[in-house]
Amino acid sequence: MADNIILIGFMAVGKGRTARALAAATGRFAVDTDDLIESMVKMKIRKIFARHGEDHFRALEQRAADWLERQVSATIVSTGGGFFMVNNLHRLGRVIYLHSSLEGILAAIRSHPNGEKKIAKRPLLQDIDRARLLYDQRLPLYRAACDTEINVEGREIAEVATEIAALIA
Ligand code: S3P
Image (cartoon, rainbow, N blue to C red; front, top):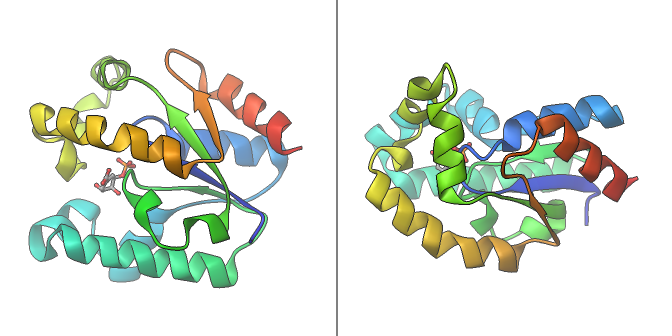
């Protein structure tokens, strides 16, 4: 198993921001699987879903996971909300699930100055009822997939990063 830290969790829970704070706190690099995919195909996630569909996007996630397994170590990896379904997740590193209720996530987005943009770029967050179903379906799967769960609801990113840094020290 590679010695990366893999952050999983629902859309917009703060995986990317936590990864960057954790990178700063530990002196490691951080990469984001959505960013890797967007750069590989030179297309935004929203467009990949619209043009090619979700199955195609999931295949790109698997390609990103295969690349990470071969090439990356000692790195903080933030992931898209469905990335945890790749077939080599545990070979990539220690898997940490960032948990918040859906209400907590939505409240944080709504109070953010760029909230509209954060919703617009996420195809699976366009319909709140469907997002709620997805959240309920995924919650037990995140819990089953992770090595460690961290509650992030209502907490500062820096505080969460400090907790994870202590865990991996
Ligand atoms: C997805 C989450 C998104 C992105 C894509 C699909 C999902 O990433 O990978 O829109 O299936 O939950 P974020 O978790 O960063 O929103």
